[in-house]
Image 1 (cartoon, rainbow, N blue to C red):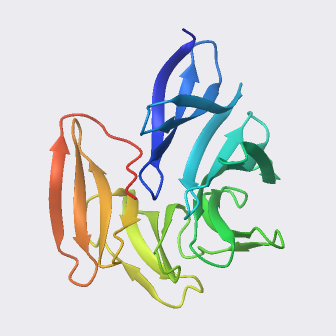
Image 2 (tube, one colour; image 1 turned 90 degrees about the vertical axis):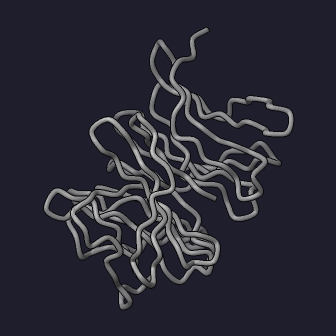
Length: 233
């Protein structure tokens, strides 16, 4: 068996599929899809590079993912029903985290083409790109509200990962974690009243629920291990 570690799982909005990345012992990765009904584990795309999914489309029929071969990064859309693959954007910069935005037939992604990671909006109709984050030198992990009006992201401030919420035009902007603790992988609740986020300690990881209106933090659980790739749908 040439397959080894499995990372970066994402579950579909319908909660019937999981996409994840599996490493090859000989190098490279395979992006794979698990049907939770029958537990079929199907390879979608394999290469000598790194292939990581960002999210499913809202209807669960497509997967947005990036592929990096060491020189070129590409954003792909995989159509689950048609079993077809489309490359929609490529760059010599590192691309990551292509996610659904719930409106305007667009996806968001992270790119370091300006020297540090920033979040961009990509139109699937006219292929135009719009930069969304300007306020920080390091912005990553976008997550869009179900209404599509605001998005969460993580910015590094004085060595601490802070979670911010912003409207698409940047006019409505707020810090959601004004404490001396780093958070990662923020995700909206479906009613947009709360966010889920991951925080790591030296030998443990905790998942928090944060009330957006009061900024009250509730620790949901802690595991005695270092967790990565929190994803809540």
